[in-house]
View 1 (cartoon, one colour):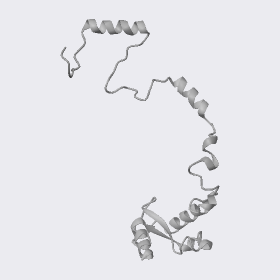
View 2 (tube, one colour):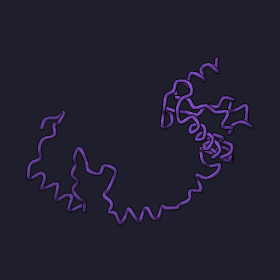
View 3 (cartoon, one colour):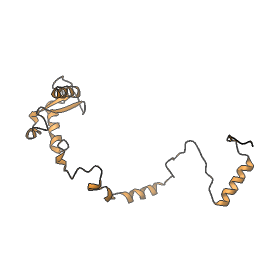
View 4 (cartoon, one colour):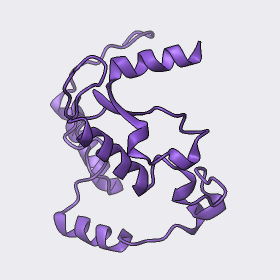
Length: 155
């Protein structure tokens, strides 16, 4: 064959037989290449082996990712340090929405889930800590009206 770029020509039967004999002699298994392998991530694993692996990993602690070693570590802050995650906030929000029947107080839009309907603090949440969970200091607003109110506050 001339030197240069070789095109992938189909192998003759003799060449395929020679490759097969060489692989058998070396103890290798012939591989079949396809464009869309059925399991591209690795070998096929039986359900029994999957169950054993899951049982081994279940409840496993990772000491290298606990406490201060975890990249999400916030200095040992409790859930009460995140006031919008605590149970009192969730209770307050539900009470405000139920009181107003999940209807925006400004435009009358009736929603049934977040973010289309939201509870708004009349008094600033960060400043007036004593009235954070007072139902009388909350309003039900749709997302659009809530954004308008906060845009006015920033000006």
